[in-house]
Length: 236
Image 1 (cartoon, helix red, strand yellow):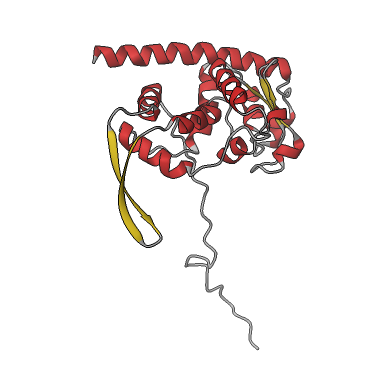
Image 2: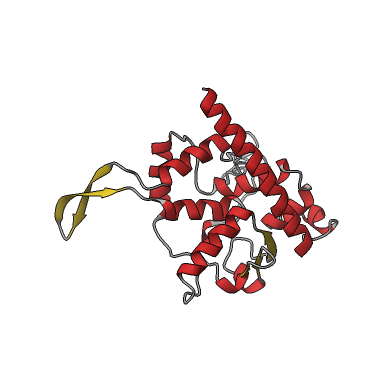
C-alpha cells in the first residue's frame, strides 16, 4: 500500500459539512398580541369545517373558541416556559401566594436543558392560574394537552400574523424582560440558557425576590406597551 503525497481534500470541500446554528429572533409584538387575543375569543359567527372520521367525510359547524390557546400563550410568553414545560406543570410548582413558579430539578429533567429555576409570575398569569385552579382543584396537572401547533397556526393566520412560531413566545419573554429593565444576567437565569458558562458562573442567581421583582416590572411594561398598541390601532 502506497501513501498519498497530496491530501485530496485540500482544494475541495470536506466530507463533513458543518452547519452553523441559526439564530432566531422573532418575538411577538404587542400589536400582534392584541390581534391574537381577539381571534382566541369566542367568535359570534359560525364556522364550517370539513371533518373525516371512520372513512366518512362530513361538515360540522361550530363557534370558534380558542381561549385555551390564549392561556397557553400567556403561560409561555410571560415566564419563558417551553410548551412541554407548560404542559408538565403541576400545581405544587405554582406558588400563588409568592407569585412565582418553581421549576425544580425533578421537573427540569423533562425539559430541554434540565436546568431548574424560579420563574416570575405576572399579574395576568396569576389571574390565569387562579381561574384554572378554581375549576380543577382535583387535578395535579395545570394544563391539559391538546394539538396547540395546528390551532396556533390557524389563529396566527386569522390574525394576519406572519412568520411566528410557538417557540418564539419563549424568545418574546426574554426580550420583554430585558426591555422592562431586567438585567441580562437575571434573564439568563430565568430562561435557563447554559451556553455561556462564563456568563452563568460569574453572576448571582435569580432568587425568590428577584423573580418577584421581574414579575412586577413585566406587569408595568406589558400594561404600557399594550395601551400604546391599542392607541395606535384606534388612530389608524
